[in-house]
Image (cartoon, rainbow, N blue to C red; front, side, top):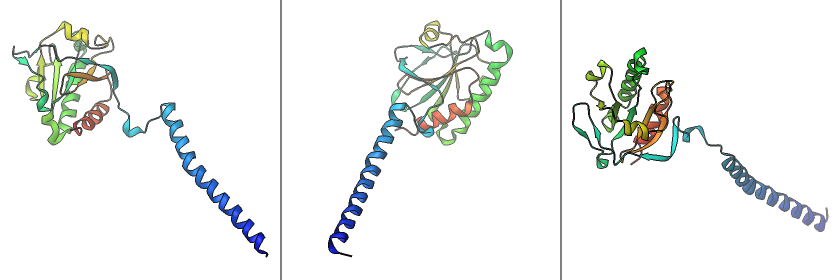
Length: 192
């Protein structure tokens, strides 16, 4: 084989390697951009609840516990809240007892982080709520109900996640899987 043929083979092989590297780099960047702009997200980054955009600001709401005491937001304590908003008609069927049991289970599954979560119940709560230390029953507040998106859901009681500052950020429809609520709040508890 002659020197010019060897040089031509080397040049062709070098070009092929350069083209392969170019395709590998820009092809993966193009693929990532295509996935990003098509709206695809990895399952680990998706939330189960409906993200409220913009979030509902409850900081100026003066919530009252059923006992008459004021419920303060206290953002410095980094307490997340799960807010159940049942309608009085929806509780007649026993759905509220089931929802309360599910929220209690979710709260207990937080383990050592359970102290960083309050379960708030708007309006009259089932009798079992008195035995659950994490449940804070709020007095009925029409302005709070109006501020929450689709709180008067005819299908049942929606559940909301409220951040430590008093912003409602997630909504779960009635009869939503409590495992999704637990997953989302557990992920939020890791935020510092």
